[in-house]
Image (cartoon, rainbow, N blue to C red; front, side, top):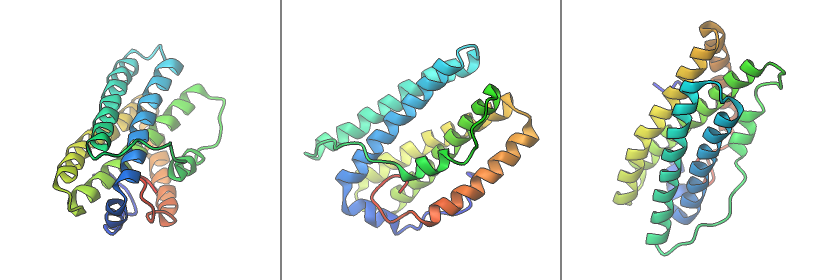
Length: 193
């Protein structure tokens, strides 16, 4: 369903589970960045009423996810650490060349957001299926559903605001590129790393 070309090795969940404080901190900041992305799209494209409406709801939802992750950090007697550099997102964002075309920038941003949500969904499934902590397993299973909805929403908007065949070609190229990026990741206790 997600279209990802390279699945996460389930052993990544073992790396994550060995340092829950790190994975939870990274996850918290991923949620915050997702909310920021939604707000940025509102600021940049205020004339797109349907996008603004969905992004406002998404920003609220992502911040509620941030709060849920932060609560789990506190409940475990841990502290939210500092934000980590996200090599994955940095690499993915470099895929599309810079363009002066405002609509093309929108399509590219929507596709990147869809991909990040798809990978997050897949990683949450890996965590929910492979970690021993039952509470966190259930937590990640619930979030997996949200991420899948976000992925489809971003892809739907990209297809709405662009020509379907061109958007789908860009999407496939981005998926191929992401698979190459993922070959060098998967050995850190980071949501995308």
